[in-house]
Length: 340
Ligand code: HPA
Ligand code: ZN
Image (cartoon, rainbow, N blue to C red):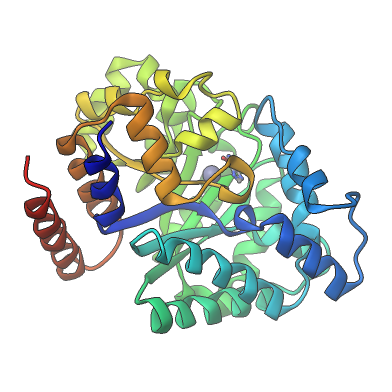
């Protein structure tokens, strides 16, 4: 890949649509917060934490990810976590983010729902002022817990509903299909929330069908395994749904075994509106631009594919159309500077 294409990647305005705030907790901040809050962590150094980040599947990662989140206690902690993420992606020329958080990971430990939400939303407002990054926040239900617990979380969210774009579904996929949460998603829809779900990361194409037919989701998180079913791909294309693809996450969790065999190009070629995202950048080796650059190098992505991916990141967002149009116009300006 030429240096020019790397420069193009860096110059392009982008949105990030698949990011777990708890997954942006860097080991340095984990140590600082552990000390600030008097919490013991089972690691002696930042290096030791990093050495523990070797995963053979999703559950391997989730175990260590939930443990790490245990250092987040005060509103300021959630603010600092969010601010650190925004600072990173501002440097990546990211203009808009739609970020997930996992309230149950915190409320289960006795942290008040409001502490989490107030800390995060204060940072999102600060990030808009400091970096000009717009944002939406998505509340994720943990799918390894019951639908009843998800309902309880939706109830707790009631005073802050206007802070959320929608609800999502994450954590251990296999054995916890979307249909398990059909009623709570319907209740969220009735409150005017958008619906998102991780589907087809480790789970089979049937889970993606369920996310579409039973839940009626507005965007698919990951969706890799949808490619195993061509009727499903046709359906996703026909519905115009976006896939939030996470290449370095897929590599770290052995969803793909080599970035060179990542299905991103195939997705684009099949007409799917695929996007590049970082998922849990503190755990998977890099933030937004690192995902873009490494994927571009591994797949030898072309200028046209990069421009499509940048456009997809905004057309797949839930920004107002006027904002999408403004970002798309800027992409064309940058594209003209990097003429074919
Ligand atoms: N999959 C499911 N749950 C998650 C992920 C993921 O990639 N990241 C954080 N929670
Ligand atoms: Zn994810």
